[in-house]
Structure formats: C-alpha cells, structure tokens
Amino acid sequence: MRQKFKQLDLSQLRFVVRGCDLCGNQEGKLLHSVVFLGKEFYFVRCPNCGMVYQNPLLDKESRKHLYETIDYWGHKHGNTGNSTMLNYYSYLEEKDIRQLSAEIRIKWIESYLPKNALILDIGCSDGLFVSALCKAGYRALGIDASETMITYGCENYGVNVYQGDFEDDWPFTESFDAVTCYATMSNFINPSLVYANIRKHLRRGGHFFFNFGDCDRLVSRFFGSRLYLYRPTAANIYSKKTVFDYCRQNDLQILEMFTDVQVVPLARLLSFFRIPGLINILKILGMEEKSMKMSLPTGYAACAVLT
Image 1 (cartoon, rainbow, N blue to C red):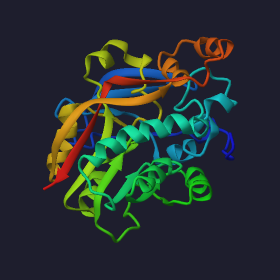
Image 2 (cartoon, one colour):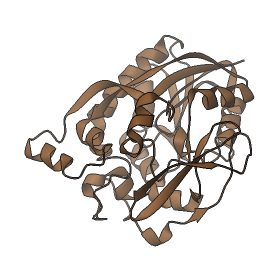
Image 3 (cartoon, rainbow, N blue to C red):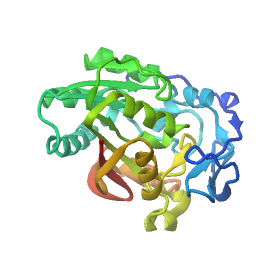
C-alpha cells in the first residue's frame, strides 16, 4: 500500500458488555457468532426493538487501533497469517472502482440537490467521495475516525477532511444541505449520538443519504457469517425497521429506500464467503483487480429529509 499503516496488534483488542443503543434494553438474545483472528464475536438481538448488536463489544480504543492497521484497509498486504479478511482487500488500490461507485451515488444525489450545495460526508476515509462531490460542483467536507486515512486524503486529494469521533461534537459551525454516510453506519457504537449530530448539523429540509446492511433480508439470513454484515467492527447491524426507528427519533423522514447498487471488487466479493483459496484462484487467473456493478441484496440505500 502507498500509505503507511500500523500492523495489527491482537493484544490491543478488548471487549466490554453493553446493551441496546436504540431502546436501552440490556437483555439481548444470541443471534449469531463468528470467529475472526482466533476470537469469537457474538451478535445478539434486542427482544424489545429488534436491533442486532455486538455483545460483548469490541471497545472504542480497540476499534481505533483497527482503523489504523494494514489488516483492516489492505488484507492483500497484511501480515496476520489469517485467511479471513477483516474489511477491505486493498482499499487505496481500488481507487478506480470506488470512483465508479461514487458516480452512481452522485447521480442519485443530483436528483435532490442543486449544485453548490454544502455536503458533509461522515466516514469519508481518504476523501475520494468528497473529492468526487467537489468535482461534480458541490461544496463538500469529510470526517473520519482514521488519522492515517485523513492524512492520505489531505495529501493526495487536497480536500477538507477532518479526523474525529462521529459520536463527539463535530468541528463544524455550518448548517449542511446534506449529510452522506456510506459503508460506515454499522461501525457506530452509539448510532443515537451520530443521528443526534446529523439532526444538529443539517438545515431544516436538508437530506441524509446513506446505505446500510440489513440482517433481516432473506439473503442475509440464509448466508449468515458468509456475508459482510458480521465483522469485528460491526457494532450494530440494522434492519429497515430499526433504521426507520432511528430516523423517527431524530425528525428524519425517509423519502426513498431501495436495494443498494455498488461496483464491487471481485476479490472483496469472494472474501465475503470465507472460503480459503478463492482469492488465490483470482490471482492465478489474473482477475485480482476485476470488479462488477451489482445490486446488493443484503442492504439498502436510503434518503431522508430533516422535517
């Protein structure tokens, strides 16, 4: 990878017991478990509201460590000796693929927002989407938890991106015309705090564009741990119901929700199935960098408006 990342240190991974962020219930029922890095991760369902969350939870400091490691952002270059991909296969090297997904998202945003609208992208990683928004005629900023990715974005894209905790006060005084959040919502430990920040920083009538994995969709339930939903950093896994609940609690009205469409690297797609050797076959066939545009039947893209 072109950017310097830390090596994963398993001794820094710790867990804490927690309850449901959505309704506060403390009694979750075990739904699923999956092994990463020799550690078992448990996901429970709240019997009160239906929210699915990791419990015990990989704590905030552990997550901060993961977000700075090569193993999280570039499995291709990791040194854990583990065949299971923690998150991305080779994020920075997938720039062209991510640009194609950005174009799909911007085309959708353009149907709602005029040019020159002010947009904040939360979970912006290296700021490629922020850069794409600016090139499309918008004024865009970004915020991400990873200091390494923010440094890369500032150096390579010249965009206004900031490092910070999504659940703390955001370092912005502006009211945004829109907030975007892609491939990030499951990482929020306390989504209620993030939604409160979105409500605080959106202007009335402003839009929230986002996507999320839905654990209750048929494909998600059928494949279980062979899908991307259950990951070490997945603090919460949503359903349509729980997303609507969070939005209602924060004066956000869902305007549109549909099966998400992305351009996905084949290496990452095959890794979802957790079958050792598949990526090596791609390498042998010279298809390691190939991708495909596809609908993702495990999740949704959505747009909400602040009422």
